[in-house]
Image (cartoon, rainbow over all chains, first blue to last red; front, side, top):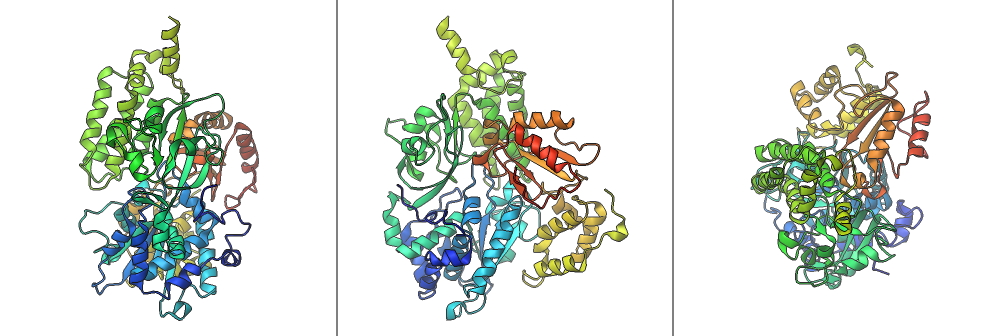
Length: 449
Length: 177
């Protein structure tokens, strides 16, 4: 059995209530933190080696240290609960099952950062979770863990939940801040970074739900102990939301460094690919990261087995590697058509582009159209290189990373599955109006001939 | 459903809630409450945001109507035209596609006799394909009202259409399907 730091009590009945959470040792991290100085709390987070769990993997302690503490303006902590990356549904699990874990993490982190008003920005579609969180906040306040002079420490904190309204782009931290100010979610130019000028122009830290929840076990164990879990610079545990054609989709907590083979095939986690089918490809970290064919997923180009960590999954760069990203793990079997799958992602990014930068606004729509054409049997051979060209021209030419996120999956799909794209051109009649993958049939025909 | 302009006014209870939300933000920053308040307005005034409704919201915030329009049109959850009482939004992005949502969507279209994006003539159902709803492990799925309905099958769609087409259907209630 793997270690559980975040989800240890996730299946305890009524764990969403204050009483049960408290009885299971909840809020001990707050009691510990408020006896320390804010700098000492930050030091523990730094020592833990915790990296942002939203996708970018930036060291959390370092991000916190950038916060402008000399400013006379109030400081803000904003929790990014705008989980919308296709394949990712882990934050929802935490908020729905153990909302107090997030609240506890928020209190500790707010204390370290000196935020007296902390916002949870949650995606609009998670409507029922707003109620769950607000109830948990009210319970915590009632128990004296929120409000004025918490546990006699002199520290004041209010937490509010603010719901979005259906925009993937608001997961980007500056777009989130714009949205939180009641505006369109257009990302801001950086610098200045939010740590200097964020919400209402004040110094602000924006962290993912899982990142902030992880502060609880870090304080309970101590940063050094937490850092012993994992592998290399990938410390601690990580939530992976697994979906696609696997036997047991769901949210799993793993020690970083778990071999990918074990994660996909052991009964403790995904349980393997559904019966009678075999693995074709994996997107290990949410739709934005490059897709990997089965062989490159299990082993890197040097033939070494991969493990679930930031470093191992990105080994080989974008030529033969991918990224751990948000932990949105999508496994696909041989029935999945890569062209169709890539088209749905391109449509997603086109729909979600805020329209501010022309390479992204125009490029995502262009890629969607070309992929639609290929998938529906009207494509040309030169369309494949056209897609690569468009993707290249979006990448790196936009204010925020949505452009890159749209370009990478298209480029990677062509890099690893080019013959499937070509097959869509040479066998247009066959692929038209069919949703399944076809290349395997074609290969079988070749063998039979 | 068209609501007379004179009737576009929050109840005292709703207005108190709106004021409470606006008060969460620092002095002069009450516009931060715009997204949550638009959700409340949409729910109260027929599940969509007509121009008079947006104008009313603007008056509450004491901002120009354009500031509300530009926000309302940016976010996909605000309906810019009327929708049926039961609004079924199918997630159609990659993982749901891999799990067969397209068959489920097609089945629903045939069953209701409308295409995605359309509303039935009796205004009971609107169906739409939307982008990732963050329930990839429980695909295929759809959002109906406040809740998610997951691991959909054709049998479940039959049940939903049967149950949610009735007069007493309440989109705020989580039904056991």
